[in-house]
Amino acid sequence: MKKITKKELVQLIDENSDIVHFGSSNNAPSNEWINKAESYLHVPFSESYKWFLVEYGGGDINGEEIFSIYEMDFKSAIGGDIVYNYIIDIRDNLHGKNEVVVSRTDFGEEFYFNYNKKNKNECPIFFRLGQGTGSEYAIDFYEFLYKRIKANIE
Image 1: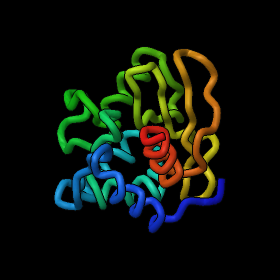
Image 2: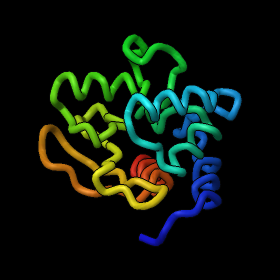
Image 3: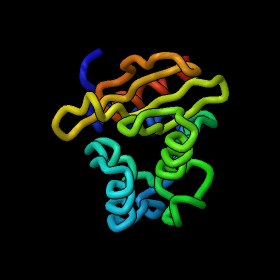
Image 4: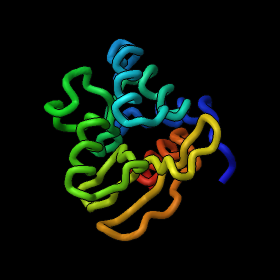
């Protein structure tokens, strides 16, 4: 697959507003909270994920929540807060310290940043079903969103 641009992704998002329910920049977590999350996780978010946070704040694709930052204490945030999910995953030995889940489906699919494979300012998204070994799903967050939207319209 060719590298997905922001422009292509935004066009796909706009064309599929019936299944893509993202917020807006008004819903975006502040830079302070993004920095807090990165500090807690001990990893810098990829540029493409930061773009998503700043542009949309969060949301879902056909009911599949894309984890965000809820701007509340990470240990009590629950739901789709990316740091809260990381805390639970580490506590329950579900993922390693360099694996940050960004979405889970009702079918047991997990999509996570694999910081062991980070490349400059981007981080690939890996896919895993159950407790199996993960495999690369997308080279960056743009491609991840693009593929998840396409998977839900085909």
